[in-house]
Length: 204
Ligand code: TMP
Image (spheres, protein in one colour):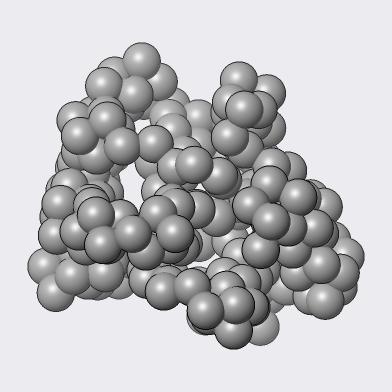
């Protein structure tokens, strides 16, 4: 089945765990699934990821934006579009909503310019379904507190408040494709909420 599903939310929302659970479920149902993450998914995009997350040097906000979009352009052209053309389900850990939320709302770069770059990098490709796993900041911070934080995760509380507000606003504007899930619940009940939606919408 040709389908493009993305997962979004702030760091610590549990989306990577949920992506793997959904991949297992869909594979058991006989679907061919390609699972990838952003930034990443190709050799070059993983190299860009290393720079973005591990650089000890400060990165100018526009440079950061262009690096995320560069990684996305590579991934879209080399992995996502070919997999969709093979009629596979593509599950992507983040996509352009993250750029709107983090670089637009978080770093406060003009959203309308970001939208232009998002369209350019993806050649206009939109997810069919986006699961937005929403958790309050306090819970996210609690979940990530024992982890060593990367360059993005080390941003301050005010930045993260703006990112959450960003995801909430994107959801309000894009309800036709975004499904908001309360991700404060345990792993299994979040997974079940996702499956209910998948079952109702796709009958699988
Ligand atoms: P991950 O930890 O969920 O793999 O995501 C990598 C980090 O990069 C995370 O802190 C969110 C951030 N990010 C952006 O700031 N902009 C983007 O466009 C993407 C895809 C991720």
